[in-house]
Amino acid sequence: MASIKLRVSGMTCSHCQAKVEQALKGTPGVYSAVVDLHSGEAEIDFEDDRATPGQLVAAVQRAGYGARLAG
Image 1 (cartoon, rainbow, N blue to C red):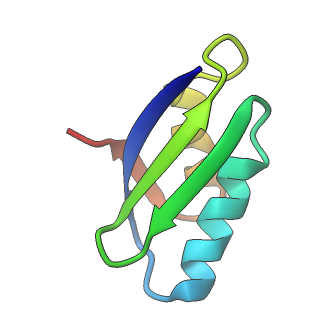
Image 2 (cartoon, one colour):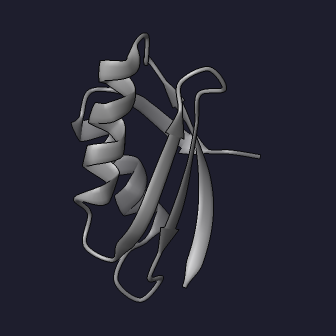
């Protein structure tokens, strides 16, 4: 199992936050995803043999938001 933090841009409300969480949780291999609207960060726990950081970024982008690796 691996953990990663993403910086998410474009979220303005709790609906946005929920949409990003849902997109991440819908990615195969993701155990949990917690998105913080105020900090603009998402913390994801996932199986690194089933999902990659690139796939997680792409899931957020498909939901209509910007994403990049935090740090």
